[in-house]
Length: 522
Image (cartoon, rainbow, N blue to C red):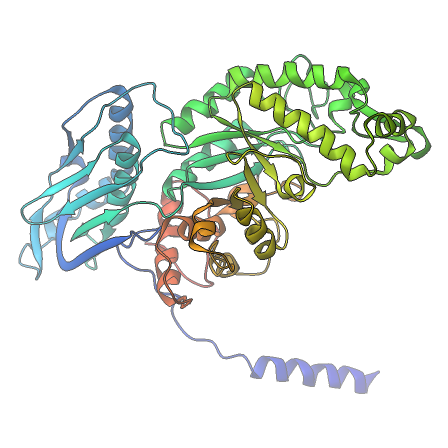
């Protein structure tokens, strides 16, 4: 035993002796760098000083939509203003490169300012920004571009090296997104997320120029959407989303240029549906459970018709996500009704039963003027899809996305951006190294890739860790979907910008985890 103890001590001492630390942060944060990186930017070493309380946005066009955005970003500029104002008298205007005080920014919305406008897949988010000695202006044709430009402007501001002043370098920017669809999937079924967590997530999406909140609102475990019944929720009083809650989310998202995309996944992932409507699910007495939706009963489709008609009036987006993944055929194999359906329709496989079901649901959504998104199994199983249906790729993706786009279909990618697959430390780099165009396809095929989504499934996250698990890891996806491809995978430069951006999110109340190891925030 003594020899073992001495050996253990020896091993411990060896382990300690191999550690070599160094002073300072693992990654030095940038100063006034933008995340996601703009398409085109010219930056000078010369700088302006911004006095938050004395600064103003000057709008050439006005409506309440724009006014609320300007007020929101003016409030963000006020962070640390009290602390700084006490010290500004110490600032020397003789400092090299000082261009003066930036007192206002002209906000030039060239198009119409419409208060009730909703974001869409086709919205124009491009903008230009000038911060020079002769011009301080942001310009866009749309309110959506103005929102992105305001976020960029707010990120240009940093604490000067004197520790006393808020500065921004002279710069010109021409910017637009690489992809139209830049989203985050949030699962509120496995763990219910309170409204506050969802709204905070929407803020973080805006800070990262993401434009889709994919709301995976129901699943096997719970059905928190309040429809005709509250059965299926974990708690019918406290763990549900009321119509008022949903409208709050939609409006909060709209004002930040974010689409709310609902997903109601069928025929699998529907156990919680059966708590209120057991007749919808395939009986499975031998396995002492219930299976997927029962496609042998016309009442199943009548229920779905009623539900989707209701959803069409609740959610504003032109798309609905119909799911269609991971269907377990065990109960269908045990069902006499399913066997009779297969005989009547000359269906030879259970994949064929799934295709029959999904085809009817897709046609139903078409009839309600819904455009659809489906998980990749729907395409792989041969369901007839119109070319406006988006195929959401989530498995081993390069072959699938090539097949989808070769068939003339449009695709979204999530396969390499599953945030619930947690590694230690700065695993954002794994997500950053994935690019939606890294597949063998023609230019026409690559044009059919409309973007993608990071996915935060809810098995191991709840209201207490959802933000820190999601951010800044989803920021990596945000940059891959907005910025031009770099052509290289060197990580020093994005690591420095993400270090700054994480601190920026922290100051704005987003509890993002450190991305790169040891460090600090100003």
